[in-house]
Image 1 (cartoon, rainbow, N blue to C red):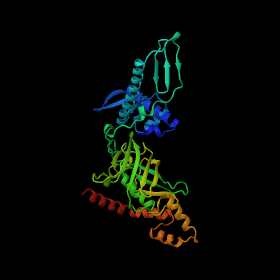
Image 2 (image 1 turned 120 degrees about the horizontal axis):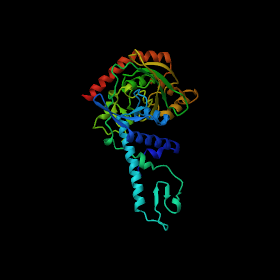
Image 3 (image 1 turned 45 degrees about the horizontal axis):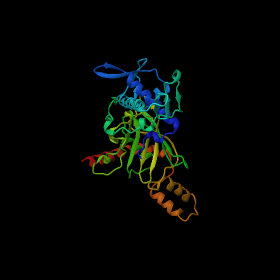
Image 4 (image 1 turned 180 degrees about the vertical axis):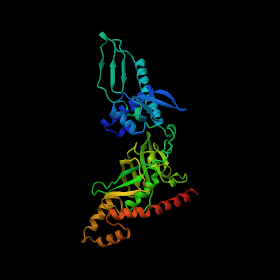
Length: 370
């Protein structure tokens, strides 16, 4: 049985998603087409709930250009609003058709049914009877849209020229609650997601020996941001069917941040390291040309330790001198250069190694694409 987004939501989240989707559909149906400098804008009213508007803005579906009373639907917002309006319209048509095709009851009334609603109209003085309502069908609203039907995602669309912004990012490694491990960096908006990968590798003491990806929602689309070798058609690599695949070296941080404020970074699919990335501050005018580590806490796991469970066992062994594997584990940790986190030392290391780390990746990309 196929599943869709609605199947994984609780009732409150589902209700919120329905309200956002219906609001976007209304904006699409009531927007005005405005010619502007050789292009076309789709302008909607601002007379909607402020919280819903803020959420749709954060998802990149609408934007405000500074004109009072006007919101612009982005290309993605227009597309997804169109889909939502069509699906709601089809649901209503099907409901009316069922009404027309149904047999009247003994009083000559026809039941009008949709989802959990059953309405009986007519009868004495136009009396109506209803059953308790239920939410709209998950399948009606949240069935996946085929990738070939979605707008083509262009990372450079709307990219700022001479972007001087920088982002302070908090990156938390998920160790399943047994120990905190996080870092904060400031990184230029013109850095790519490949650059962010390179920086994360250095500040968490990873050795860049495994595959990685970022997942993020930007401009109404789910993105799977990968390294170039994933795009080799000869490789049999899992790629989510509902995500647009983008090469990490082709998309800049400023292409999606800060409209989108969170992302997930995965490294080493065997050990399964998951990192939460969050924009905590946008610096409007920065002279930064390379990422800087500014804060952090918690020791990072050694490479190939076996995931969060393996790291927890590792910590228990090295903390117990009486454990039979204590000495061997310490020797292995030393070989892996798994040292306690030292903020000042890591700051120097990131600064000293940045150019060489990027050069190695440029060489690697050239070999992959040769």
